[in-house]
Amino acid sequence: MTHPAVHPQTPHVAVASACMLGEGPVWDHRSNTLFWVDIKNPGIWHYRQEAKEHFRIDAPERIGFIALTPDEDEVIAGFKSGLARFNLRTGAVQPIVSPDKDKPNNRINDGHVGPDGAIYFGTMDDEEKTESGAFWRWDGKELTQFHSGIVVTNGPAFSPDGRLLYATDTMKQTVYALDAEGGRIGEPRPFARFEQAWGHPDGMAVDAEGYVWVCHWGASRITRFAPDGSVERVVPVPTAQVTKCAFGGPDLTTLYITTAAIGHDPHLDVMAGHLFQVETGGIRGLKTHLFEG
Image (cartoon, rainbow, N blue to C red):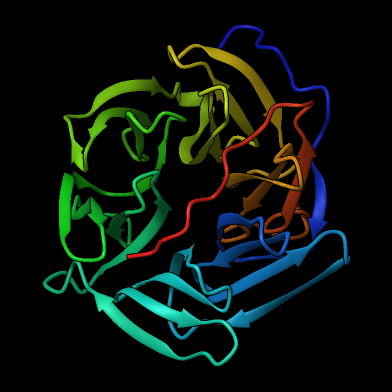
């Protein structure tokens, strides 16, 4: 990366959440609420910026992401054991499907509802050692695997027209693009390869212009990639382990950023694990899809 453009604003702490492994931000436009999860100190966080309130609820097991449903009190949770309906008010859990019953060391990591209404998510080795992870699609009836042999999965996310799916092999430092049509996913091809000094690609978000914002685990930044894979800009983040970002706010022009404190000395990296936010300068995100399956 040679002298990339730097975003003119610096992210600031929105919620001092100190998550062990913050992940999975998702904006609910119905209630103007940002949700995110703490995977390894299992919980779901809520943040309402206008009301200046935030709180968390405990999750019954490790949780990689949540997907919104038409019922604002119910989400689809990507638990370690599998997908389940989870009631945010009562804590009731209704298991749906378990992709890795034969791999007890695996867990669900990142996930996303695509424009077709299906949930796209990844599984991974919880110890981050073996290539037991894969990407999956669940439409409410059928569970399909479309890319496997991965240690740590991240993403996926879709282009605005729904024709491209982006998915990350974190350990191989590569973000892939896959053709998507009618629920059929094509073969992965490299979209962006991280240089050694960039850390590892983690979660991502796609904006309304089709640019891909990829978080850098271990390198204190987010990179905005153009649709051709070139670097458009860098957003410095004042903590090392940047995990995922999502667009929110009334105009979808606020970028929310989750981070992780795991493995870091809080005296040296004092903002590790907090939720950050930054204005995009008018760049809009995409509306969150609901899972209705």
